[in-house]
Image 1 (cartoon, rainbow, N blue to C red):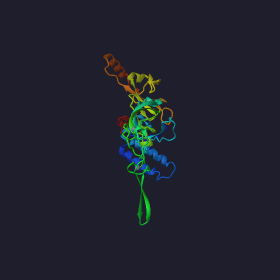
Image 2 (cartoon, rainbow, N blue to C red):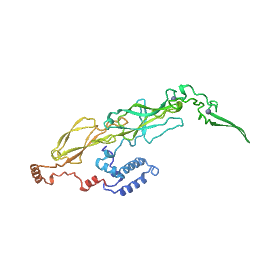
Image 3 (cartoon, helix red, strand yellow):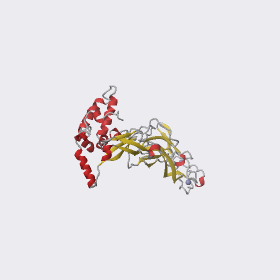
Image 4 (cartoon, helix red, strand yellow):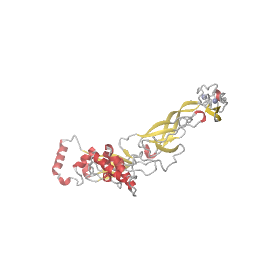
Length: 372
Ligand SMILES: [Zn+2]
Ligand SMILES: [Zn+2]
């Protein structure tokens, strides 16, 4: 993560650049490195870097996240750039994953696709979860076995087309005789007709039914990704393929952890004494594990600590990302007179020598707060 290039450097602007400066810099670089224009090796990579940097820095919200959290704030969010390549094998019912806006197939006969949203907790992303889904789908009518004819008897042939489903008309013209074939309107091309309709389904062969399914949600999934559960959509008429069920995943927001792709960010509060003298913390990770962390004396508000491997996995099965702890130094309130005296005494003894050297400029700090 630290090896990723600084986005401001990528665009050749300074951290305080205005949005129009950023746009100007991007346009110039994009023109220079666009693969249609620049055939040299490396141009395409550079073009992608420039575009990725612009995507973050042109969006005030993303830019602010980047200023505060670095690449962890905007980096590889699992829902983005996921192309589904190189995987498979989540059991029988999952044959592929794709974006919710992805391909949709439909044929005239096939049953309708169903869509639903499954909400899971962030903890569920760690190992995946079995979700019980109750929904209503159109299934084949049992009493008539889907034929629509009472008692399940086979439907008689259509009289209009003699069971062929087609109407053939011989036409003569100046150029000779030809046969015009059209779909039989009486049986809609099926060749059979319902004579005494099944009372359960009114002759359609289909009924709506409540069903329950266990959906295995894989570890590492992110909001916006969609599972396709093949064949669990509506049944098609008379033996046609059923549609699919599409379950879009929504990961609920967590009260303590924010997720950025495989990485998590959380805040830890220190009082000014702990921040000044250093502290031993027990950090509770997303999986509930307690991890000891020693903070050096003099830690500043906004400082960041990394716990490697305590983030979340991704769908490609890569190792868990990292957990970032953002330090927040909390100023005490409601002090007693005695406490105020102690602090006053401390204050009198403090000099500029007790300030950190690397505090940066005031303007940088203000910018990182306002994100501009
Ligand atoms: Zn017919
Ligand atoms: Zn029926």
